[in-house]
Image 1 (cartoon, rainbow, N blue to C red):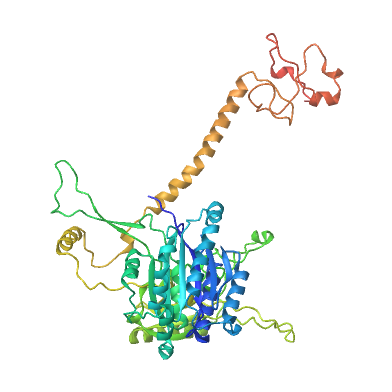
Image 2 (image 1 turned 90 degrees about the vertical axis):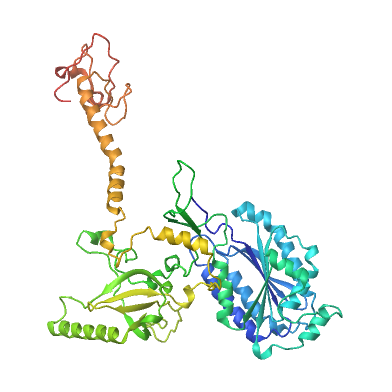
Length: 558
């Protein structure tokens, strides 16, 4: 019942077709989307979601701007390639009718992956799959025809998907499209003008090799497309099992017990976890010492406790209560109530409490939620030396939603922002489920108890018992070892053991001496004749059967 995560992430090669009507607006949006994507990829903790990437520019000829290689720890090179992609239109070497450039670029991309696939697999256990994405400003039918012609020459064994993304600009949709299409088809025009391809290419679409997508020319649409690379692509195992009671009308063999109805599901991430980013403290309100500031060891004994930041939230907007989706709220919920700080004056405490109650009453009466942003001091200017201006990168600011309640308190939770959102393309099904399945599941759900309201105090998760048993389990070996140690000490007092020298570990016997190391002198030699150094460090001779040592045999001074 285990599954691997982010183990099937494919290598991505991006081919950008710069032939007209590809313009500076599409290039700017594409550059900004790629920069935002890889700033996330190179900073996210855990397994890399986009491990291998390559970038090609298709102009008069295919040009490799970023060879196929690992992304994590390689952001400066990725950033330089994206900047070079942005400035590619200013070279003046583009051709409006070089329709074979897409085919040549696709062949070079597949050849580069084939040469490096074994190296990636040996170094990092790569899953050895490739996903090629072609960004173009032409209609999808033109690129589909070019891919269709070279399908017989492509080795599709390690190709997961060839995705054709047509960036459409409504204002500049028609720009010599018929001329470009006729040139690529070498005099034969296509019979269809919609987004579907020919019959042979339709087979590829059903097989899942070629995927056609039309998106609008804006930064948000391109950013959502590239963020789809961050989802887990593994389909080796299911993610979740939901167990329902067995239906009563199900028939089973004699002597067999009815089995539960199991719904096998996959989990789909809605947000990126801020705790995997470097600025996790900016997206949550600190109430514990997990992210607290460290304290010197010398001050811990003086009664000082860990320090957390006093957060400042600045009101941003009012939101209708019925327009907030639960899927955009995350984090541990916190209750907000007026302060009881004893350092404030009594009049200030009373005024603050009245303002807080009036604020909660107005929000609840008008059915509004308050959207607040974390107020961060601007540290971009050096305040100590204002003449030496040094711009620092801005810190992110998290947003929080404050929801009123009847008890004149507020519930505050973190709310998602643009950078943390992942694309979600779920659609409402148009057909109803099968009637037999509906009856079976209705019978299964009818066996569950119905509660009018949820009381969390009546639901226990056995946390206390698990914590107690784990603590006792960890302490049992110590107690057993201490018990064995005391029993061994008691037995050594009554048995004859070989004595070892002080500070030298085990003696000649197999058991370490439990008494303080002393020197036993033979009876035939007086103690007064033994030098002082030998009295302490001289090892005793091996005992014989006639030698029986008692406490009177040891010198008093030793």
